Amino acid sequence: MLSCKKVSLLVVQSQELPLRFSQKMSVGIHLLICRGCRAFKKQMTFLQHFIKRTDNDDFVDVNLPKQAKERIKQTLLNHF
Ligand SMILES: [Zn+2]
Image 1 (cartoon, rainbow, N blue to C red):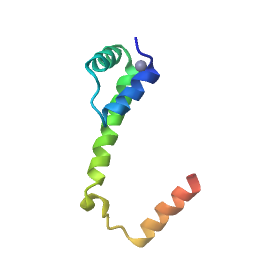
Image 2 (tube, protein in one colour):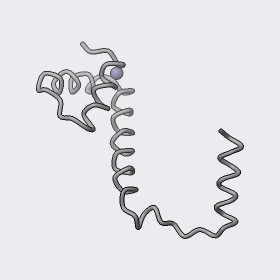
Image 3 (tube, rainbow, N blue to C red):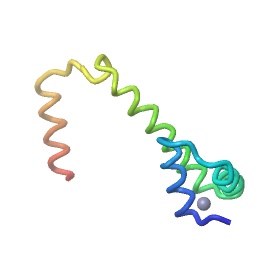
Image 4 (tube, helix red, strand yellow):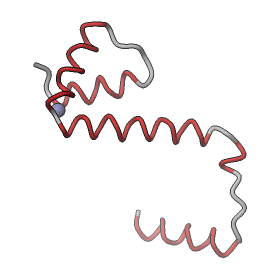
């Protein structure tokens, strides 16, 4: 049986490239019994959809007031 680390790598890989049949089967069996990897796969799927949506210029072009942009910038700078 695959380790959680290997499954997470395959889940990430599967977002870009198709997995071989044996890999799909191994990942599928692991996902049936591992709640953590199922949650990880769900999060990756969500992120993939979010990233695709941000490719759309209409979504990215958020018209925020200058004060809001500055407040977001300062919050990010203070946390990172
Ligand atoms: Zn796992």
